[in-house]
Image 1: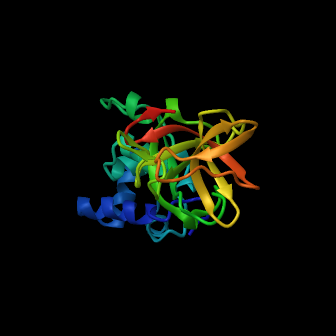
Image 2: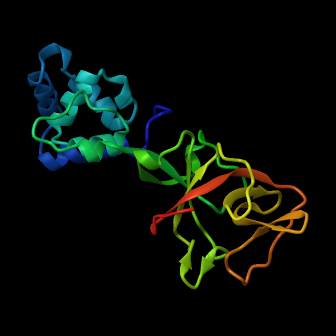
Length: 230
């Protein structure tokens, strides 16, 4: 599997082809119709794409677009699923809103180590983040635990939170994802009691914590599915 490609993309491509009832040779011929040799993808190369031994991004933009059209994949689905840009606006497709999303891996919050962007094994899903909410290097974590749950809802198990790893300045009342030795990742609200900073939970059943050592992963600035800015 190419190291930079989503492992599910080969099956996704194959699924679109089989749903159309077409053979690889027919898809290959269709790509040639969209621009001749410059857009043509051979049957053998299609076979490698579907096997996962060749990456989509290795194709030229013209061939990517020809493949998208041959497989009858909408512009919005193509961008959201592959993360690859379009060659140009497709005629008749209203894609302005659909294109303004960024596909970000989702990792589980309950883990023993720091989230690493290169660690594909920890990915449990992908989130389509609106461009206006995307930040460089952002993390999307799925919450496991009720320490930040309140009677009004709060951050509940299964909810997703957006973390800005560039925002590491600890501020009173803000929510952060932190790594505590021996406990792993946790999401807590920062509170000051006297001269000391404490990590508190919004759920009163969980007492405040004053750890001797902690690593700040980043500040939580968005919460799904309620969509509350924090």
